[in-house]
Image 1 (cartoon, one colour):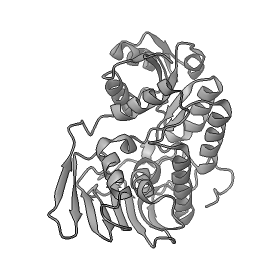
Image 2 (image 1 turned 90 degrees about the vertical axis):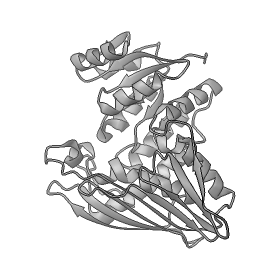
Image 3 (image 1 turned 180 degrees about the vertical axis):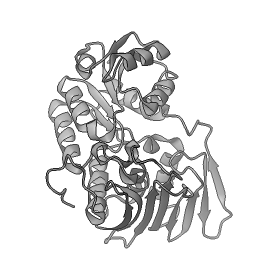
Length: 334
């Protein structure tokens, strides 16, 4: 692949707008097409960003030979279909998180991408954030010793009306897939897939989780993670990693940190900062482009096996709290 990477954008909602805005700040990034379920929406998006081609259906985007990689920004329930069709058309894919509704769908996508030798990455922008990468490096290097506990939360004040997508089970609504994926992914970045999963939730009348607490455990190390997500409570949005030799605290906005504090036993606290814009999605876009130019089919920063492990944990949480989406003919195994 040449220096220029040609992008197609699938869907025209808020996250697609934000991603495209940040993507266009990167050298060598070109957005050549956008698609939506309506031509009017695609055309309006194309006009806003100066995109040459707008499609009122998905197939046109997937068939566009000028598109190197498709960014899938649809609601959760459409990720499997959209990303799968893009891969079948020979396009690389960056797919919003959570990767799919459940682990079975995620495994299907990963198998398809590996069979076709095509790039696939979950858009877990937190993993590409420079400070999160630095934090993970410090933990791996033993800066705080053996991990004992991880704490993280992500809650929004709400309330969201009953007809909002976040309360619609048909589109994968609920706190878990939109918000809980962040604390779960943070814990598993540092500790891997847990051995035990406990969860408790407040469910909405529609059957999605409004407030969920999770306790994950790792038998080999004895580590545990206390995590939560909410659609009706403005939680601190902080994270903390405690080890046998110290602690790392991330203030509000742990998934796009501007700084964190390293506490090492016997030392003064050390504040670690970065000059990079923590709110930008450009880091994940840059990682996709780096991988494509190198001929890689997955990213070492957001490995597919890691995304599958997170989906298995989310499935286990849903099993514990009794949330099942209407597309799932049978209960998803934990």
